[in-house]
Image (cartoon, rainbow, N blue to C red; front, side, top):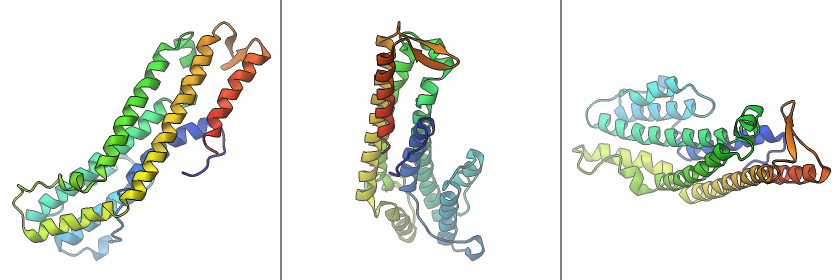
Length: 249
């Protein structure tokens, strides 16, 4: 996890992106196949398609663009079955990655302490606390699912044994998907630490909201910012903010 030293708002937004990207990057398979080098061999065609998906999802991408590649079938026969299975696996992984990012972005501190949210949800912040609680549940589900996605059993489940295809095509599928599990232990370790960080962030955000609830008569919103009526309350609030920032050190 890269250290993030800049303003808190950016840091909280980034964590959602980092989690999603870590999950997605764990499935990158670098075939390095160019369109010019693609032959009529269906194996080369599938490798090119995988490489296209990896390149599109390497940064910010348009959903329509990635869907176009994921939903098309460029091969026929047995290899069309293999291509669809691989793309279904990658699509499910991409969707889960996007879900993780969306979950974290919905509860970033900028959104929670925005003038609109504070005005609408004070003084007891019932909706905010529900969002944070729901996010913890979702993240736990994502953690379990992402770990399962890295297993050989899960990967092979996308091409059922009941599928009647040639041994050559099945071996190609197993070989390509095996590349996605070569560094399972390292990836799972990274995911564990990343999800631990995400849960720590939520816990700190809950502490900040609880502080505002407990001291609801000691602060007000002025020009979009929370202002306390005593220095000690302001210091207590700032200390919680600093603890949250400190998670990124």
